[in-house]
Length: 334
Image 1: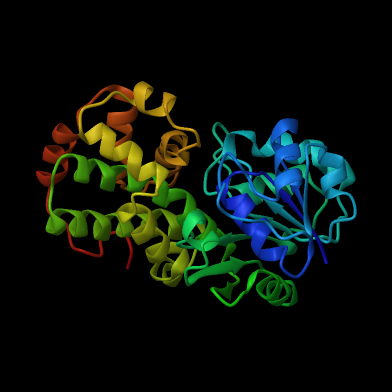
Image 2: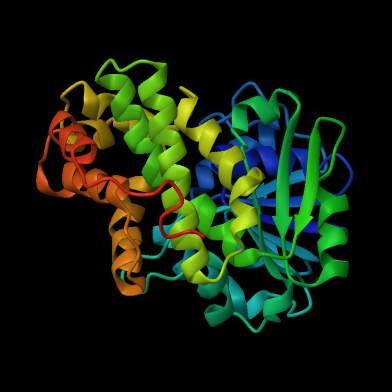
């Protein structure tokens, strides 16, 4: 098969490398100099310099060249640029080619998930638009450490094809028809990772972190179900699995933002020195707007928003969370 991976960040590069072991892959990089370096050295010097790409992976900064003739399109573009890039590519896409999003975010303003944006910008049948998601830290997967993910797409035959495409000896892939649940879990968990990082930055121990992550999962589930997802999805790789990885790994960009906020640093300083996008910084606002629209209570997400956008201190938000009115554990889920 011919695969197009749009976006040459760490995860896009890792996926290009995995699929390039058995298929022809075109990896699109926005910057021509990066595309040239990847093509020349078979490695991404900016994001995964120690990961050698298979010879079947070629890089280009020409979007039309990357997607023309591709049988599967993999979108690895941050949420804030997703629509523009896909719109530019749409004129060159085969409508029969499945489109898989790797992006864990929500579009600002519209509050749409990336598969919904894809549906608006392309002529692709919605049943073959999906996501690949789960506890997938790019550097670990590129290093060949055992990992698992879920590919969510409504068309069962396409789901099996994509499962075979992404599956490898160290990367196990499951299928799930619940695109809404899988995709919303991936976007929402970034907000919670900021909270988990702040808890670490404040010096809290394992009890505090475990309580926070468990209650974060309850919030993800409440909103995800309100959006149309299945509650069982949030107990799987897209929900609990991804949440655990991003809340506890020092490789998580969103957790890193939270850690530094917990230490008292300003958001502007933290974001300025980061090379890659921390989706949760932008996604939190959209998550809170979605929660308000659907009448879903999300106190942890609200606390993160207060820290990010209103200058509240993480310690102050901890006090507000701990002194809230008592509730049943499954409030808003059952």
